Structure formats: structure tokens, C-alpha cells
Picture 1 (cartoon, one colour):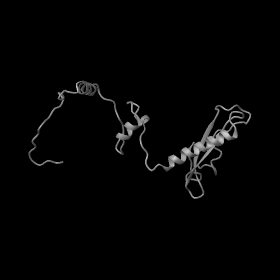
Picture 2: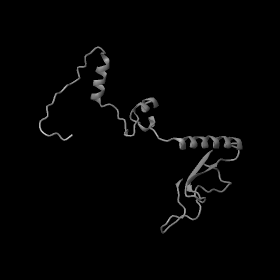
Picture 3: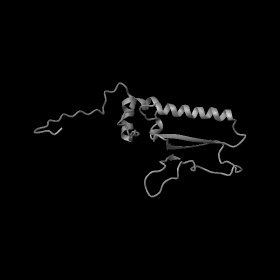
Picture 4: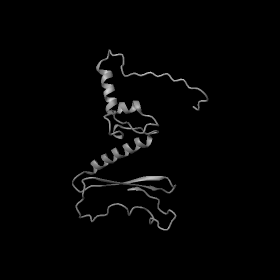
Length: 153
């Protein structure tokens, strides 16, 4: 549900706690999902944000032990995420190219923004470079430039 600051300055404010947010249903109404997690970050008494999660499920679908186990998994996943000092990319961050996590780890850096597929020309040059491993690199070009005067690096 997001992050809410109860009592923020301004013309309109949330009333007290945010417990009124979320889906409210008649208990006799059929639930639209077999399992539902609703989470909201709200400030605690010290002003630090606390994640409050409500888990809902229809009677007869899960036992209390099932929900306790799922809640433990959810807590473990959140604890592991909170312990990360630095984030990193995953293959899903680069949908234009097929990468493994190892590929992404090799390329990852703070400056990395995107990984694009090869252009058709690049694909052709790459094909010819790997097709004949004994070739001397017919697509290598070398240039020598001589600069005169003041050069602004």
C-alpha cells in the first residue's frame, strides 16, 4: 500500500493510524484470492518507518501452521533484503538480452544503466571474428593521428 506519514503538515492529513487503509470486506464475502499480503510502511513512535503486513486467507485453504510458515519465509526474505549493503542488477533488469546472473555480475558496476543487444553490423563482425579462429582480424583498423597546438583534454 505504500508509505504513509500520519499527521503530516498540510491542509489534509490522514486520521491517526493507517489501520483504516486496505481492503475492508464483509467477513461473509468470498475472497478474491487464496492468499493476500497487504503491507504498509508507517512511522513508529520514534519516527522510524515500520513495515506492517496483514495476511488474509479464506477459511479452509490454509492451516494456522501454514500461515506461520509463510510468515516466517516472508520475514526471512525481508530480513535478508534489509541486510544487503548494496543492491545489484539481475537478468530481469536487462530484458533485451539473454543473460545469466553470472553475466550480470561480471558486468555490474555503479555506472551500469542498460545492456543493449548487438546491432546487425556488430553481429556480422562478431560472427566473422569467431567463424574463422585463424583469421588475422580483417575488420581491425588502426589510425595514427598527429595533433598540433593546445589540446584540451
